[in-house]
Length: 353
Figure 1 (tube, rainbow, N blue to C red):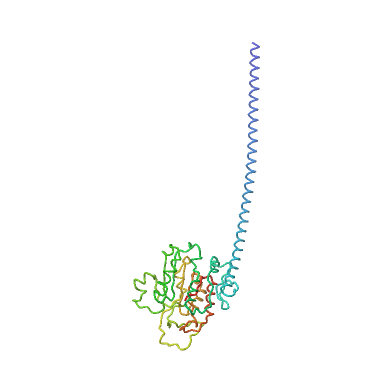
Figure 2: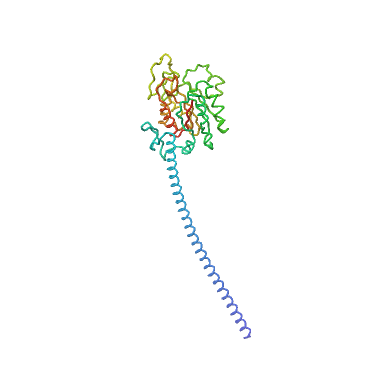
């Protein structure tokens, strides 16, 4: 009896010892898990700190890149301004000082400063334009040689995706066949992408009184010209005395011997205001100007009102006392200066005949 009880007690003690050992092992394992979790948390904290440092480094890199970009932009603006001055030196015979506005100073036009809205992409294009010639163009061969040398802006402008519409303005259109039918449609229009050719708007200005049955009001005329404006191109809305070959800009006087009976009263409009109301900055604007000497005051007015910047390419017939039959004392040098000033303002300008 005693031996049975003794065996049971021994067995119970062994089981208790085993249980204690198991519990101890479980507690040890739990302790190990807790230690491992603590290590994992430490590693996660360390990685989070490292991620934060990496993020801070990236932020600093971004700031450095922003500063480098800003400095690069400033350097580029300075280079473009210098390029503008170089172009002006080539086209104007000397570079006037860079100003902070578009007003005239000492008879010379100034470009905007580096912070202005000047289209600096036009700088390189201006350098590609043909030089102005002071030749008299007495012979048709000389004139043809000059016209053949003209570099048209669409040929050097590259992509024209920034333009949504092509606008051709003939200021001093005369007859429909003078330039719209004979030059613009067959020679100039094909230089543009088909997208812009299909988004074409043509406006013609003519001061000479046009009766209701004149060609611009005919079905044929309306095929080529979308807007016909029977007004003289000027600097204000008014009535004025006008005759072909007779000009009276503010700065230049008429020569003597004018037959006053040749003058007729016509309407004149502020061309700068018309541009502001009818042309968008996304338009490619080509302007042909043949306005009997008024170009000197009209272009200056456009420049001072900021509307000259709406014009991309200008074909200017500049009038002076070198033209036979033109009653004015405008010298040839004034025309060359006018063309240089217009080009220095960023317009791709050509002399036209």
